[in-house]
Length: 386
Image 1 (cartoon, helix red, strand yellow):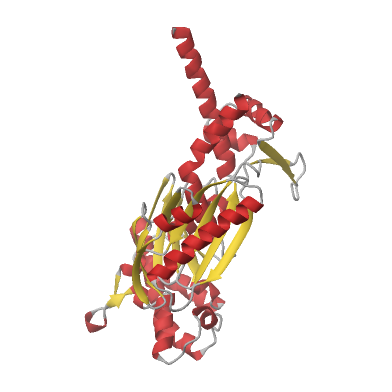
Image 2 (cartoon, rainbow, N blue to C red; image 1 turned 30 degrees about the horizontal axis):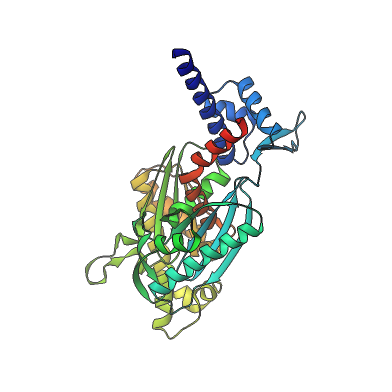
């Protein structure tokens, strides 16, 4: 009896090790056998043996990368077979919806983009998100992929992640809605939500710096102004835009001064009814230049507040300011740097991220994956051992 019990314990431990290795490969797009062994504190020969078994049953694939400017063997990076399954990520902002199907080899296999009508109500937004979830499931099935979960990246503040209840700014003002129930019903899948600032941060960290253990602070400036901090295995997000700005009768919040919503209101008050993306893509426009007089120092001050609160090693800024000229972006970094040096604080690395528009959707797909991946991989390991 005791022998059978020990045997089951050894089998369980072996299964857990295999699942951990697959999870590491999935979460680290540049993983090698050596990094798996180092970061999971496993023996290198044991890792090589387990991965060889996964190669034999076509669970893990190996790609050779050239060593540019170096001699010696090529790097062999690992990834999961791309047909194991996928998760869907939907990134909602006030003006656009973007969605991806992300497979377990970290490849985007399907994409949908839709503009949000200017007069869309909270109910309209819920319907648009649900329809996009349904559509993405159909696209994934065309790729012969099983979808395991849906992730929603929602503009903050997200009051209740379990229901996707968000109290947020849309093009016509503030609204409150619950997004998870409708998306879950439309897709027929487990659905999870998080602030889209957190989704962007997770995507940025996982795809660009998967082995980093220092502290990242990600600032997302769209219609609202959010912040997310990633520190080792911890992650939390909040709303910089709700901090007070100014004093006296002119007091407001940062979201009223330096966000996409504030720029749109600024334009409407002057009789300009262009779409936000058209306005932002015209940085030499006199209206934008006038808005920036107050918006640039206000945004820099908000970033400074976040750095003081969280003391990050690195700051990544994404959103409407990344579309503006280099001298505007440089002025933000300069203002933040000068303020930190004035009070004797260290200056972290600060950069404005300029990439494609799908990082938030990829991050939402990763957030959904994190909820269900252990169960999926455990079933996969059990099936391969059967």
